[in-house]
Image 1 (spheres, rainbow, N blue to C red):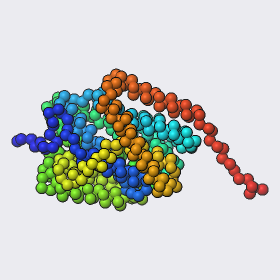
Image 2 (image 1 turned 135 degrees about the horizontal axis):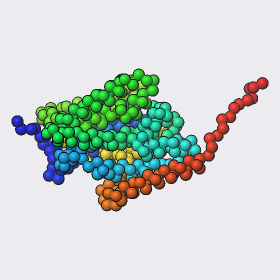
Image 3 (image 1 turned 180 degrees about the horizontal axis):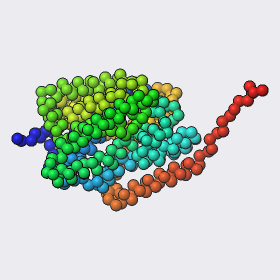
Image 4 (image 1 turned 60 degrees about the vertical axis):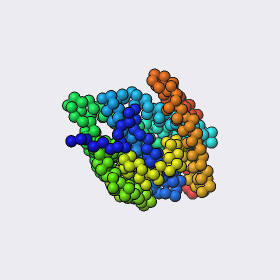
Length: 408
């Protein structure tokens, strides 16, 4: 029997997947949802993070499967080098720039939390640091942590470290046994996603849902469902659905996702942390898969709207910059200050994308190979020196004062 190959997902002669404008648009929708959530008008916009995670799992798994198909394995050093060039430059700019700005403004308590959180963000472990520090994500704008939003970047980085190793091992076993890779990867992704969902449900009874919200084990479900949508069996099933019912199904999924974003209200939506996040991630994964299979449909066409695509292109830097600027304007900021902070975040994100991210990612030859590894090491060491120098420059915390006027 001839194996079904979805026409859109078929490999190009260069081994690259065709560019899909709708996925850029989905990135734009995701970052706008998070921005509106943090700015105030959209309580459920934090679900944009799930959409980001699903997209990451989908795109990274597709890339890895294409490499295995072309070469028989995955070059882990090359993959991690590409991820470093993608993530580190803009992240280092935000970590250093924000820390220096907080220091220049004389915000001692904010600087203290930045110096406590920054090294963990640099190491890609911030989510676990915040969980261990009992830093409640839903204590909105309370203690003030300019790097709190980087927990999701840490979850992605941990996935980028582990998932390619899994695929290398699975590819080696499949090659030795003469089996196809895609069904094995699909099975592992599905089982791991179910395990992640089970962990989230088991931990959902805690008074503060931060552990479920930030844990790599509980949030891996979104990444793994995205990975599942990139595998051959699921692509084949979606290719069948991408005929007569593709437009209707995409519209239902998009409308359902929008409804969840409108109805969810953070920690007050207990149903989210008892399985709702998994349902949202599944809907997002199906929507991503359908947009890839039917790029000419009305939903994919709407997502390909130029302003959304442009926002998707700068989404990584926009995500990095928006939260520190909102924190610096303070919890009592008015609408004008919020608009100015968001506008400044968009401007900085555009500059970062065009002057930092894209040149290093696509054009800088020195950023590759051994010289690239040395550069990444130098940036890491430079950030460590910055944390150390500013930590020692911090003034001692003010001693608590006790009102004794009422004592006799």
